[in-house]
Amino acid sequence: VDGLYHRNIVDIALAAIQDPTTFSALNTTPFEQRYGTSDGRDIRIYSEAYNSDAALRAYREVSAVPRQARDTMERIVILVDFYSDGTLLANFGEASLHPIYMFFANQSKYTRSKPTSKSCHHLAYIPDLPSGWQNTYTDRFKKPPTKDVHTHMRRELMQAVWRLLLSDKRLRRAYDKGLVSICGDGLTRRAFIRFNTYAGDFLEKQFPCPRCLIPKDQLADLGTPRDMRMRSKFREDSEHRQGLVEQARNRIFKKGYSVNSTRVKSLLEEGSFTPTTNAFSEFLLPRGVNFFSLFAVDLLHEFELGVWKTVFTHLIRIL
Image (cartoon, rainbow, N blue to C red; front, side, top):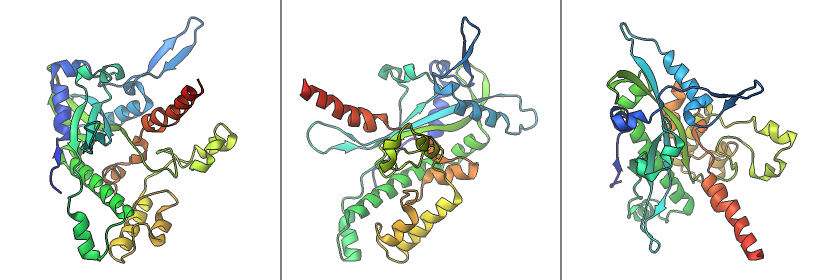
């Protein structure tokens, strides 16, 4: 596949903490924000990613990494957010791009929401599948690729791009041991990279939420005791899940079953998995991180461009 343009995650992170202006806007030490009321109550305030429980856990985790001799440097956490979705380049025509953007959750959400803040970093542009791949497929298998095969190929390409981005040795070192850098204020610190969220257009609809296992046909139970019990069933990455995906891939590539065959679906349908090896799972599971916890709920596509748009359109028609 030609036409992959990408940058290095570590290079972007180091450029941010070394720039005086950018570094001054980064909150690199997570904290709890609290409010004391006039009647003596102590209330926890949740406002930014850097005062969340996830950020505090990440800071405790990097603080617990054993220090080398004479290592007295301050340790900081770089919280990284990723966003990826296809976008049209014009109102007419089919010209499009599929960018991957990178943000730093150490910056205030009010800063990141301003286009003039330059807080959105272009990480990669996922290329299209080669123009002649359908002909190659037809010549090899004596029939044209189905819609399911095309979807599978796009998934494979997406994960191949992420596998390239995550295979950087410096990124692995920045995650495990931290990278020493002179920051924008002139002080030398050891910076640890942690993935905070991944947002995108999740097309999987058997389980609408990317984090839990509540099926679509049980959404009507929202707010009931049964719903609260179901919410405790989170999606969990594991070696067992990886093994199921590997078995499904063996049935496709070694035994010749189609991507959407019953023999393949029977292995994956319980968790609504796909027969594609996930690059984040390969990177994070050995480090004890559940990659499903990265996924942010897609309010844009699920509500603002979905339910709310439909409701608003209906209200306009009534009026």
